Image (tube, rainbow, N blue to C red; front, side, top):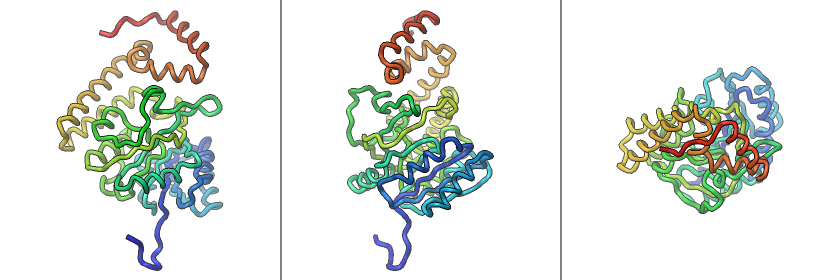
Length: 315
């Protein structure tokens, strides 16, 4: 439905950037948004109580370009920052982007075309790259699913996302979905994973584009790098999902399987070589080869085995 004549309409996309103590990376993130080939966007940066140069950097972009807006608030965590940003957004679709990630120049234009060609969905996501600036980047699907993983436009069901969340840098959803779900839940560690789970359990529909259109910065300080915290958070979120929604038998089985797998991960975190062998070896090997080269990765593997010892077969 077209808007009545004379009534202002919002942009197609609102890129929401939660930013806390992000002075070292925020400029690159906002430069990438400003460099988008697609122009019908706004960017809402939420300064979540930062005490570094984050507020000054965000404000400078807003002063130079009216498509940038800044929301300042006391520290409320990532969920609170996303809620503040989406609440002040005017776009038809929300695009999420952390203050240390980068949308590639074609991201919004390809996403717009994808939405036009694959209408009727609530959530749209793409492939992307894991990125260590200046050193290495690797395709997400290849790293975690292998080079032979079939790349095709597809939809993920709730059971799929229960088992493994999709790559969500630059993920896009209808703005009204945020209100329908009551926003992001404060106080949970994996607020974005929780949002996707609740959305799909509520009937939202997902569509995936296999093109890599963003960079996810790799850093040891990230929340996602804290494996035990992520695993414990996942167990809580999945338990809440089972409690709060009427799930199918297939979804219930997926929840039980995922909780068991996270429990195994937590139990093995004090045995890092076993963790690598049993759970992360395929991805770790591809990352090591991509970053170090095949020969140096092989030497590193041999060195670790000589120092730690070989792991006995899994029981």
